[in-house]
Image: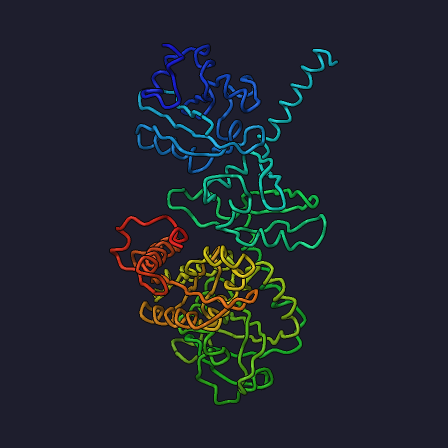
Length: 128
Length: 450
């Protein structure tokens, strides 16, 4: 898998991410946050770590919507994942959002990914 | 030069501070006096993003505009160089149908002016807290009614339908009514537009359920003069002893003239329940009144109408004549609404140029008629501002409660759909909701229609 071809809006990105190593996702030029069914963070790439000012040790294993990114804990984001899980459906949607990285409001695009056959869900972050 | 060690320890400290702010369970925002956001933490984004009309968080006042239209003005008018602009202001949100019941309904906002350039805001979700507080407030009102020093009061017995069973000196002293009132409903003590037949029975039922029912407001004397009064209705003990005699006393009614306390109560009430600019009911007062009316209608079905009004081309008025002139137009509209509707109706400013009126015991024809009277009245008015005379118009949407309407949000949605229809048919008109309107694809809020 060549990281040079992996873009924020690539098709089948969830599968690519699942198959990518930590070193590979660290080369991506967008933020990657992967989390499990209990919303605990399992994957966190260098781009996101740099943008948020948080090292992976502070984030990995922590509950995403309460301890890592509480700004996503509303019906625009967190509930989309809950709904997808409840309905057993795929989620692949890109929305405009504002993150509070280092306490500055930063306009971003968020891509929300959840597939039925993968245990890992992803929030991907790209600046607009 | 810094040693590598101290750089490392600064870096760790910085990261810990950053995480401290990321995790703070309240929203913190630092902004300019004009609301432009400088720093903002995640909980603020969590609470504000669903409200933000433009999907941006560049301006705090813009983000909150649809639910708290006064902020910019209040901040501007704050007279001191620094200090608390307000503390714990409650902002009522419009429930979103995509959201679950756990989403916030009420936000608390504190605004601190740091200096002539900066403000700091603290935001939190106080929905659960407010529910508890409301129950306490009701108990407080009851204790006040009983424990406050009573100079004079009228005591009357009511039968099961709320008619006066007897007459005594205290009724004459406080209200001036004579013995002929026996057999009349207790609504004779209310101004004609402040009571409906349904409300008369609601209060009796609420007294049955809670042990008492209390209200405060203008009441009527025999000579037509009005006084500020606290009225308490309580069920009588042992009323079963009278068997099924329909004229036997079932409740006692206590009327207290509290005109001297009115100023103080009114001031407190205004601070919490009035829109800063227009003096109309604010969102909080509107949603509380709506909840009470819907509960009552759920128990004893009756008509209930909602009319939403929106000033036409209001953005254009603001752009052309400036915001102060726009505010004058809003105040003029508020006055027209106040003059047109009854005391029993709840007339509220929901946000920006959106107003809503809740009309108990009113059907669709009647509501449409009075809404159209308001529309026609507005079309004849001119608002003087800065040497201009501004003419303006309003559009209105009418919806009434029926078995299929659901809660207040559904009712608002229907009235909004009708309003959108009125706008798209050319404005300066009133439209009533019909089932066809719901199936059309409407923009989320009428403000998009101008």
